[in-house]
Image (tube, rainbow, N blue to C red; front, side, top):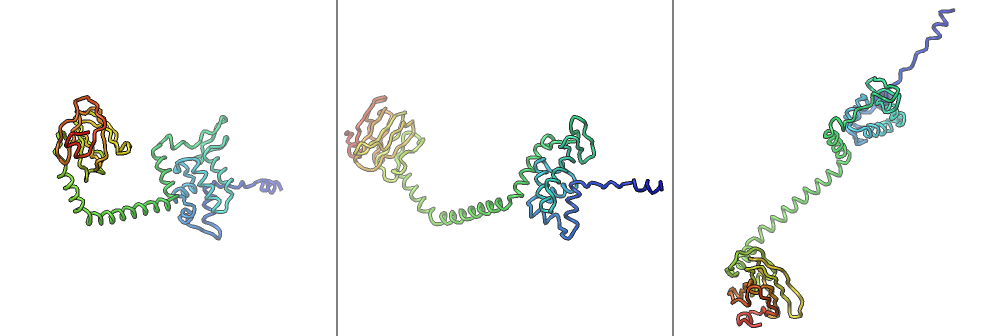
Length: 287
């Protein structure tokens, strides 16, 4: 009788499964056995991360927030209670006071001593690249679309650009050659050109030999150009007889009319205004 009592007192303690074991059992047993690669594609989570969750290898995943987030999604996909799985993982990682980590280390009275070390402290570069990889992996469709658009744009530019090169180079080259040949032999090397929209038809060209403020107005008194030119700067005056100029340093401006340099219209440092830029007036040196 005593023997029977002793046998009845022996109670088997059920073994508590870890979070990883619960995940693996849910995936591999029962009527819906599933491959981990299939679930990885459905959840857009790397297969290696899901394997790490099943094995309890939490150091493989860079950040705690990712571990818990992946585990919650994985548990929901497998029909498990996500809160229970997350709670177990927190205990296994030592994130809850009084719990021990998956390695079996115990926590002291002041708090967990088995908390998972931060990967950011161990290897911040690795953590960064893992996060980037995970983001790209989860949004690969966007990146593939953007890459396709870029490639298409490059192809179109190449095709259209190639067509222009075949049909237009000879005329463009001819225009440039004629324009260059019609320009005078400046007394200064050209530094910068202004009014280039008038370059083809300009009969009057100004070049600064010294720093000088130049303002050009049309027949109604509207300013069409106003700038301080420095030595070498060139301005192509619009074609016509209605334009007048003001020079802050008249002696520092060369005026070319139909390729011919006319005499200076003022002295160095002299301000001259109301200068007619009509070719016939300049050649006669008239205002």
